[in-house]
Length: 290
Image 1 (cartoon, rainbow, N blue to C red):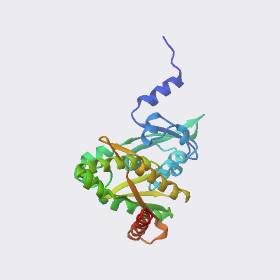
Image 2: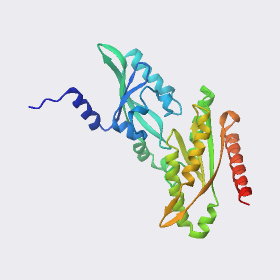
Image 3: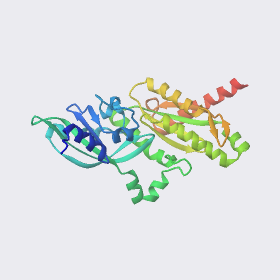
Image 4: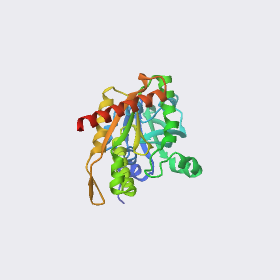
């Protein structure tokens, strides 16, 4: 009879179990995770999370409930099961349920081990109309109604913990010309293509919305001021990358304006400021082309 080592058994279990599994030290820093966890968050390697907390990764609009649960597990030895929560994944806010228990070594708690499962689709089936009302029919991303709901969560987090966030207002330049020259059906294909590029650009803890027509909004909580310009450049590159749609090469240009909540006093003032800056960029491009 072939002997199976504990290490091999552990590795096989991590692959078999259909959930994102992770383990952390007593300071809530990641020690490891299985492949399903990495795939879920779009990570290339476990090295991207080793030594970091959830807050460092920026996966939650409000990280406090997650932190409180983990402190109960580590400090009190509690086992917590099926706790609902939300996390930011590939430009979307997803619903999860997480379970966590103490990680023991030598009879002492040295950290925690846990797993989560995504229940977004399950909840959407239960409340199909509500889910539909928050989803853009053409692109499949969040729509303007979802934006109105989610930005309030960002504002509340700012008021509670002064977690600043930035709003990017994006408009596709000259998109009407695409519709006029190739037709609206082709224009829809272009919008879908641009959306895929923006989803990729938004993967770093951003939430993406189709605000209307050829306008998009991206929200991102800030950990470093340098992120503002880095993300803006990434968005522009995503929009203006060459495209071949149904055999026709198309180059789309976009104007973008951004504003931080700390510059304003309300979500209304925030988007107005970002919109103003977006049009300033658009007009400066027009003047340059002339």
